Image 1: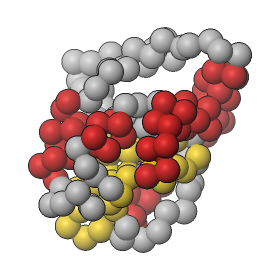
Image 2 (image 1 turned 180 degrees about the vertical axis):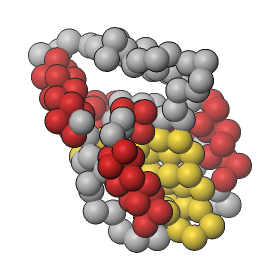
Image 3 (image 1 turned 120 degrees about the horizontal axis):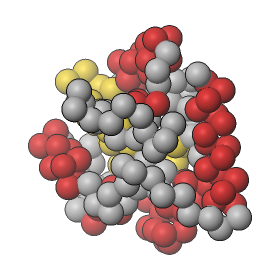
Image 4 (image 1 turned 90 degrees about the vertical axis):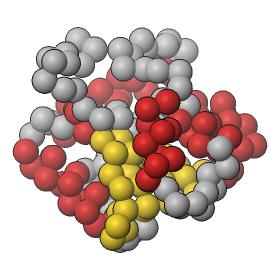
Amino acid sequence: MARRIESAAFLLTALGNIGMRVPIGWYRPHLETSLALIERATTGRSDAIIDVGGGESTLVDDLLARGYQNITVLDISETAIDVCKKRLGAASEQIHRLVANATVVELEAGVYDVWHDRAAFHFLTAMEQRAAYVRNVARSVKRGGHVIVSTFGPEGPTQCSGR
């Protein structure tokens, strides 16, 4: 499964490098539900938030616009991270960017107040990957922190964008 995730990241990166936009079925221009959940979970604008799989997402734009100051975006695709950086311009200097796989990256312990993931967990189909992901969450989210993970529900699609 790790090879499948890396292959998907490679494909999206390769297509992005030649200027080809890939339609992604779960894309939303603004993540109102996620924003509302983050607003409820945080106690202040300096709370540490990580957006896992947030590469090209505009969530970081909306968080910055609301005054959040401690934002990390983690994505397996460097191209996606670069798209975000370019879109944000000078504001991109306000965010931390990590190009990594959420199941193997070594994040600092007890750093994040909010872990947000709307794009990565549902790709983890092997039990050992899910366990590694959960270990990373448990290690890096502060005691009393919040974890927001969106996945497909029982009535949702059985596959993601043809995969």
